[in-house]
Amino acid sequence: MTANFKDLEKWSPELNICIRCGYCYELCPLYKAHPWESDTPRAKMLLVYGLLTGDLEPSQHVAEKISECFFCKNCENNCSANVPVTDIIKEAKAALAEAGYEVDRTASTVDEDLCCRCYTCVSVCKAEAVEPDEDGQPVVDPVECEGCGVCAASCPSGAISQKDGFGVSREELRQLLLDTLRKGAQVE
Ligand code: SF4
Ligand code: SF4
Ligand code: SF4
View 1 (cartoon, rainbow, N blue to C red):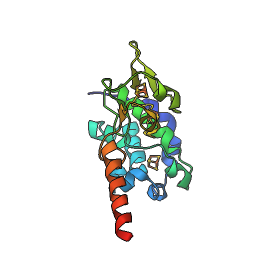
View 2: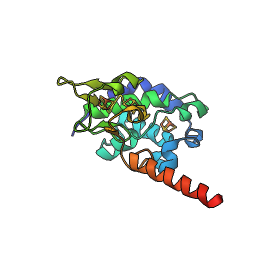
View 3: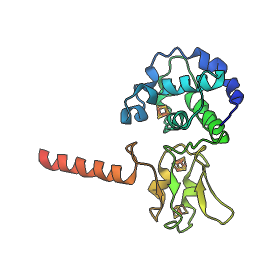
View 4: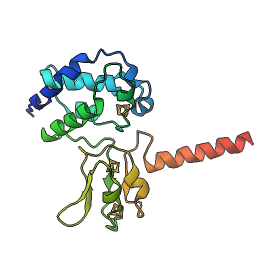
């Protein structure tokens, strides 16, 4: 698969002022779920830099690492160099999707069989990432989706979910609730 990531050139100054200090990952929820260097915002910036310069071959693995983000902006707010991490991530996701890679890691998906087409998800999504397709079925754009989970929490049909492995899927949240209740019962 060949791909041109020259559209990311506009971020070259910001990627160059990143001093790799690591303040960005101290409050990163994604890093808390996956405590590997490759899961930090700092690593995402390095991956994008590699795509831009051509030093890094794009791959599905690279696309997955870059597209695992909740867009909470904790990294930006903690960044000593004011690097616009989430803007860079979103544009890198778009470039990778255009090149044919899947970028749906922390994005939500709608189960068509459960969806009642109330369009609550469309109205609550601040990122404007959910739109009806030509048949009227709401569909999440994985490039625009910021993984906030508001649509999943608002859907009356329970038709929206996120993947396991990031601590936010329906089953993971259910387990967290059960564990918390059990701990509370033990304390009493
Ligand atoms: S915006 Fe993404 S990379 Fe930054 S702290 Fe939040 S989850 Fe981590
Ligand atoms: S909120 Fe749920 S049921 Fe309503 S349109 Fe969206 S996915 Fe379908
Ligand atoms: S997870 Fe958040 S950003 Fe993504 S589609 Fe749902 S409401 Fe929109």
